[in-house]
Image (cartoon, one colour):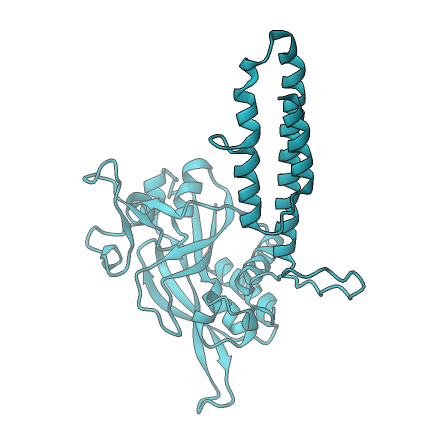
Length: 338
C-alpha cells in the first residue's frame, strides 16, 4: 500500500490540464470525496499495522497537498488565459491609453454655486431626501389643501411598519425643508446653503424631469431686508454668468415667503425672433412669519430671506444646453465635453 503513494504521485505529475473540463476531471479522479484515489487511500489507513500508520498518513497528506497545488495552479493559468483572450500577452506593444472620468456638469455647477456662496459667508447643510410631511409642507406654511400635496406633484412614501401613520413621508419636493431643520437646531443668526436632489411627479420633457437639483439659501438675522436679498442674487448671477447678465424680478407666491418673487435670466438666442427668451432660475422672498412661528423664532426680533435656485437651469444657461434630459442620459459623448 505505501507503494501506491509513489505511483499516484507519478501519475499526478504526468497529468496535463488544458481546460476547465480537464481540471474538473483531475479533481474528481484524485481528490473527489466519493471516488478519488487519494481519499480512497485515507480510508485504507485502518488496514495498516499501528506502527506504520503515522508515517503513511504523513506521506498521504503531502500527496494530497501536492495534487491540490497542481489543480490550483492549473485553474489560475486557465483563468489568466481566458482574461487575455487565450493569447499570449505581447509586452513589447505600447500600453492602452487610460480614460479618465470627469465631474458631471451638474456637480460642477453646484460646486461653483457653493464656492460663490461660501465667499458670501454662507455655510453648507445637507438635509435628508426622504422627509416628513411636516418638514416638507406643514412647517413651511402649506395649507392642508395646497395643490403641491396632491399625488400628481409629490411622491408619497408608505411606512411599511405602519401604513396608517399620521405623519406620512415623502421624497422631498424642494430643499426648503432644510430651512426648518436648521432653525430647529440653531438659533439666529443663520446664513446657510442647502444643496441636494429633489423629486416631483412631473411629465418628462425637454424642460422638466422627475428629479432635479436645487440650492436653498436661508439668511436669518435682525434687520434683514429684501434689498439685501436682491443684492446677493445679483452677486451670484454676475459670478456665474458675467457682469453683463440681465435679471428680471417678478412678483410671485410661495407659501413660505412673503413677499415672494421669481427671478429670470435673459437667454440670448440669435435664431429667435425676439433675440432670446427669459428663463426662470430661482424663487425667493422674505421668510413668512408663520414659518418662524413653526420653529420658535421670534418674529418681532428676526427677519430673513430664502432662495431656491435650480441647478439644471443654471447649468443649461452656462453651457447653452436646451434639453434637461441630457443631464440624466449618461451619454459619454455629452459628458466628455466637461
